[in-house]
Length: 180
Image (cartoon, rainbow, N blue to C red):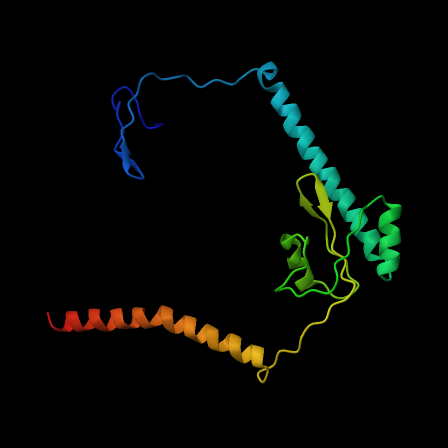
């Protein structure tokens, strides 16, 4: 639409799904810079939101430092209560089978944190979340582990299903080119 001018008043066909459109120039509207009064409310709202986000992030960093200084789960919970933060504990669970009620988007923190560590604040809407890892058992998955062998075989089968047809297609194309 921005390429249309009086000498070029229609566009090339534009396809969107099953429909084709042609744009026609009806009128040109001159560009203008709105007055401050016209945009003041939006500018103030945008600035206020950006400033609130900045302050929330700063406060989240301060809280994270304080919470990370907790020596154990009991101290963490006491400090969180002192800061008027609510806490929720989840019993033993696996990353592949998260605890009921646990926000799955927070699971990424578990992979990078060690036992007794606190994540950076994660914002979800108007709330901020910290993850404290009170206990973490990482299974020893070596080449002799049955689960490892099973997962490796599943990956090999998936690889074969994807690459097999591609390899066959390449052979057929090469054969057709040689016979021409």
